[in-house]
Length: 393
Image (cartoon, rainbow, N blue to C red; front, side, top):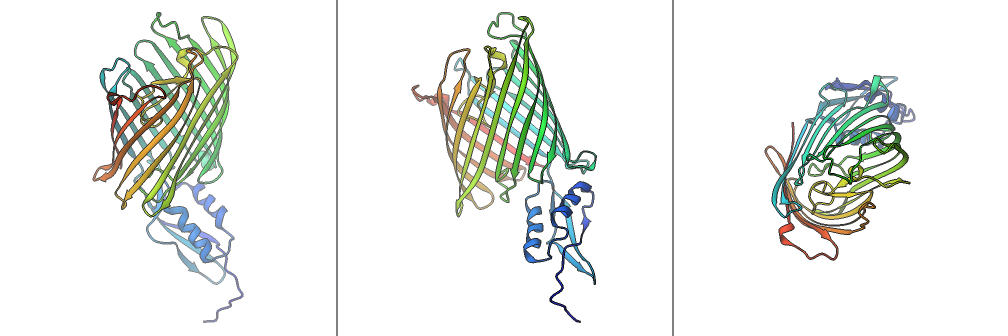
């Protein structure tokens, strides 16, 4: 066989084997990134790496190559990942009257059932103060075989028999690549006061448009959801307080960032920050404020027990991995909120520890946390206990 070392090979095509029902746009994006590039170890490693942490597919074996006289084809032996998930959390703690209460969260994701990398998400939460949240969200990343995606979300929040909010957020976005997307969204929100004695709240309607960005960097550590996640957005809304016949413009800003930093060996540092602000020339009603606190934000507080027109918090969490099956964590959080209607600006803290480990049905989490306002005495009966399970199927 004669070998001409001066004849540089380029990647000419991809051939999919095994799980072949992947979206056509996914393959086109892969071709756009690598087709025509030099066939060498650098690009082969890059192709293989792009599948190592992919959310929906993986490779059964490293990419294989077929050489012909005038072409080079890369064979990809794909398999479909188990990406459906069930995430359940039970929380124990005291409510505003120091009464011991039980609360919980259910989060179910159906992913890639129709082989379009689509997601249907169902979310329900009950907090200790009798508030309930229900979310239904659908995401289709490659609409009409393009890089344009569709996201539809409906959120319902009801605070016992006091008020109820309904919000719809239709959005279109563009997949910049497999990790980054940018989009436009609409907001349609209405709130109704149920209890006439609730004078802090008002009936209102909101509508507007906004822009948002999201970046997710996958992780190769199964114990973590991702390595890095960043999202943020801005919305311009018009708010009408129906009974007062008042209309006012409103600006809303939101940011979230999280990163798992590898210190060395089995030592990791989880860094997280979140903040949001709403701005208007008139005072906000209590039922339109942001609600946060709980398992996924300020963990030493009850779910959605903190209300603000502006808030932020930062979190540092040390994680020690025990092989690939478990990790211990110790965390501290600092935050501040502003509630103009109550004229308060408390500075908050939260501390705690936890243990996360794999069992046959999924990833189990157990956590103790305690949060309070700076200046208030530490109370052991304010300790929150959370137990959860994340299962993929």
